[in-house]
Structure formats: structure tokens, C-alpha cells
Image 1 (cartoon, rainbow, N blue to C red):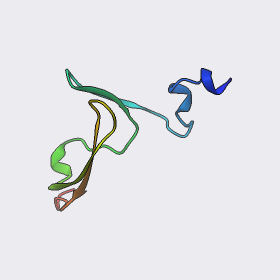
Image 2 (cartoon, helix red, strand yellow):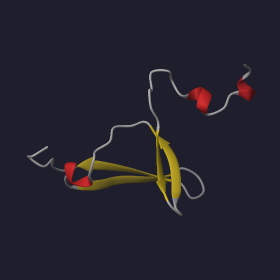
Image 3 (tube, rainbow, N blue to C red):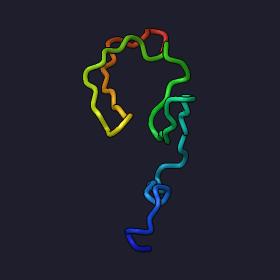
Image 4 (cartoon, rainbow, N blue to C red):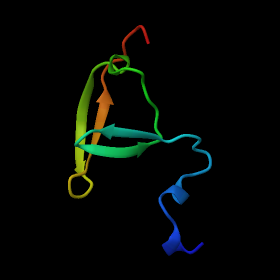
Length: 72
């Protein structure tokens, strides 16, 4: 297959068994293969450390976890 004919699906490494699609209706829809929590309370407090523009209408937010709840 030539480089020009590859699709984004072809770029997913075989080591990634599952891709979750995060759909924030009316805002964004993205494939996500990262680590997840069942609820935001599992993360604790966070601080946004940096925001980056990733093109028109796309932002990347970098954050720091300040504390993790003791019951996690």
C-alpha cells in the first residue's frame, strides 16, 4: 500500500486492542486509546498547566493531578 493510500485506521498499531470514541455532542468527536477512569472523582483535583492550539477549533489541554483520593 502506498503512503498516499493509507487511512487513519491503518495507522493504529496492532498493539492497541480497542479504540474508544469520545463524543461531546455539538463540540467534538475523537478516537481515544488512552487510560480512562469510571468517574472524574477518581482523579481528584487537577491544575491546567498548558493549553495548545492544534488547528482551527482544536485545543490540547495539559494538566497536572494535584492529589488522588485515598479511596482509589
